Amino acid sequence: MSKLTKQQQAEAYWATCAEQPAGAVCPVRTTLNVLGGKWKLLILSYLLAGPQRYGELRRLMPEVTEKMLIQELRELEADAIVERIVYQQVPPKVEYQLTEYGRQVQPMFTELIRWGQSYRDRNRKLEEAA
Image (cartoon, rainbow, N blue to C red; front, side):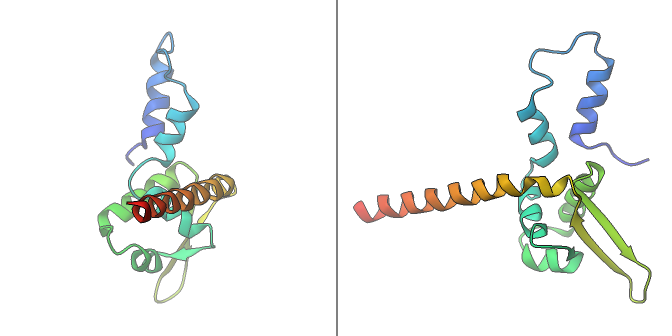
């Protein structure tokens, strides 16, 4: 039996409630349940460029442990954001790619990148002024 993701746990809990707790079914909470975490957004940013093998993701993110990368990929797969493709060959080959639903994060990433660049520019200007 596989471990439930945060969103699956929340949905299971809400299904048992006679009345929804105030603010429980909130789009922001759902987004954080599915995409939140230290590494998920970074994983998704690399998968936006196209399918990646596990080893490629490890090289792109040397600061993440193997255990954490595997856990995050499994959660994204369980939430149908990422799909794992296993090729029956020797040596075994596994690729991860965004599902059609997962690709819907592209506009959000465009905005996150723009905001991040603006924030870095702001900090540079503050440092130069000091």
